[in-house]
Length: 235
Image 1 (tube, rainbow, N blue to C red):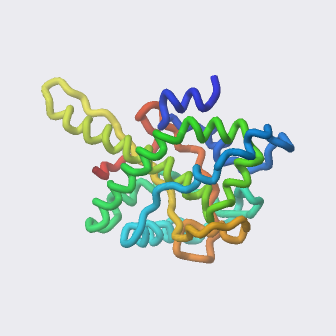
Image 2 (spheres, helix red, strand yellow; image 1 turned 45 degrees about the vertical axis):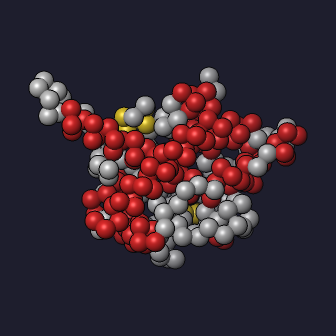
Image 3 (tube, rainbow, N blue to C red; image 1 turned 90 degrees about the horizontal axis):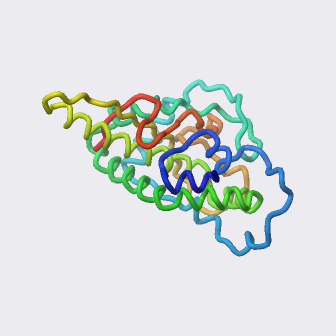
């Protein structure tokens, strides 16, 4: 079954194989794409919902803490040596560490990410699989495009898991009910949103310029709405 077919059924079921397709870190094996690929606007898949204002500042500051003292050992999609992406379970802690004043915006952003990814997941997998070379170029059209897409996918799962946590909490109050485990797994954010095609703009998802950009997390696996990680209800 094609990845797009899987995501059409379960848009939040993101496994390592899907990340390898939509967020590749190596050049495509094919040297050319079908001619139809030149007629598609693939950069739109990297024009995703983004946090702003105080929420963005809080996420960037939180990212600085996670990247503190990191040693670049991984490679990103443009061949740069980068810091390994912090475990998604560590990003989940933002929901409890963030100032209470930004939590409504956090919930709203995660909701937007969930809606956006549910709508685009299947098409993104299909286009990345069918047009790998054009997709790779599209990854560099917006500054930090891959990072933003990765963030969107993660926050989409975060929102879904938070809803599961909320439903489980409510259900646990009923006679005979057993609470389930809901988990959130957000990734980092970056302020840069200008168009570019240069590798130098792939800046780290934090305020600091000393840490190299994070690689794309592949340990975050969602099957339906059950996520592997640590949970926090942001709704």
